[in-house]
View 1 (cartoon, rainbow, N blue to C red):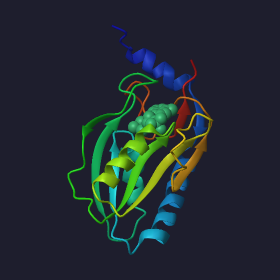
View 2: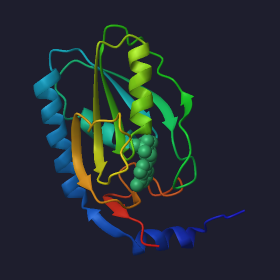
View 3: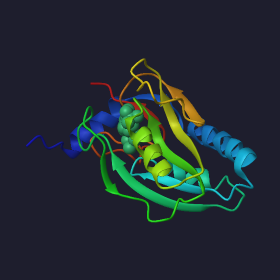
View 4: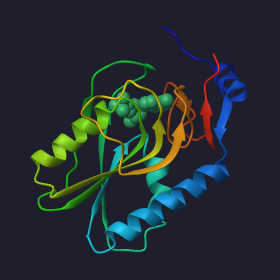
Length: 185
Ligand code: IMP
Ligand code: MG
């Protein structure tokens, strides 16, 4: 089995390229919060946190929202422990009723869009009346699924590299990194 050592994990972090500093990430989350607040302060929205990647983004974003809202979560994953490919696996579905609600889906990163498309479809099928998407990072490339539009709220525009930190993982590690980093192989 291809087990990564603690030393190897430190090396990944030490060698990584910092794409956005913690300060840049925090400022972008504040901007996303202000935009959501301006649009949805009277919409009584329900926020759906896509675990695990969106946990850090969601935790910080929610503190910028001075408005009534509910929070639920779901666990849908595209990658498992691999860094590419794979279909969407639903591990946990939201427990709240979405019927007639304004739903804001929070994810760490919009890459090809399979994850958000599948979650948007779930929300539609479960009666959500308005569906918005917010991502911390939009990954720029030309592989976007043809049916997936840009997210409604985007924190940062990132190059087409494998990223970790601020919730995003490298093989399940470094979700805790205090900034957004690209793996340097
Ligand atoms: P998509 O379905 O292709 O848009 O991929 C989005 C999902 O894949 C996100 O929810 C992330 O969990 C994961 N993902 C995509 N790109 C990266 C990356 O660069 N680093 C870490 N996770 C990523
Ligand atoms: Mg994810």
